[in-house]
Image (cartoon, rainbow, N blue to C red; front, side, top):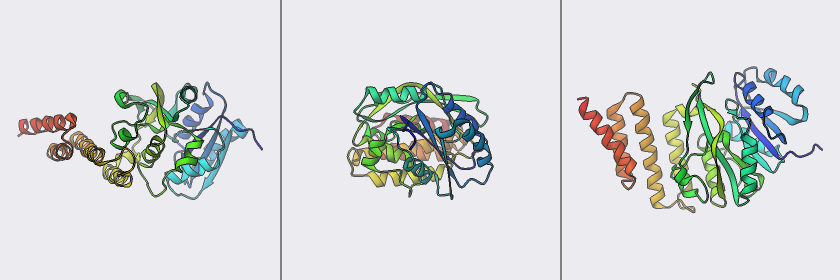
Length: 300
């Protein structure tokens, strides 16, 4: 039996042959070397097997390649988790990229905070061609500690390519929910955070790719998934009436921002007003509605 690595790197891949070499090279370039990759090819129809082949030859037992019929992102991640055996599990999607410090920072954070179930850090967004765009700075007010309620309300975001969590947490709260085809990551982070603290790494440790095929660009699908997430966890620890209203308002505010960017000021205003009416205690909801209203009036 192969020796266990300290970290198993969980990589799901579906028709991502264009990006996969850069992702795999970013793991191979880590300053922390005690890792193993578990790569699950979720029924790709492109040339993913051919792209992976030289990496298998190069990395040997440090790369386990599993091919399965297409079952979706949560199922692919779960297959990788089941095939892993390390103390820590680190996420990397096939189109994202790690900085060389990614694993060393994450392992250090979890070892320094034994009460934390997961650790995350900051990302810089890149486009299809890898050109840097903006940097996600996080919400420092709710960045770490017991933040289950903030995760539920989406007052804090935990970027997937920066997430590392303990295997023991999976044994405690279960795997990714395969019935959820979006927001399944936030669902697991919330379940872990309801039992454990969250550790925060205040520096950029990964690049997050905003590709044209990204699931997050399907606005309605993401809204429906977030509503399902809110309903699923309502009534659990940290997810009461007020957090539920704040969570719904967050959805409407984000939709308002998206509609504004699409050049739909009236629809954006209506969504912002819905956010303000749903949770008027958040000054940002009122500020957004007021700003959009002023812009709509001035354009008439």
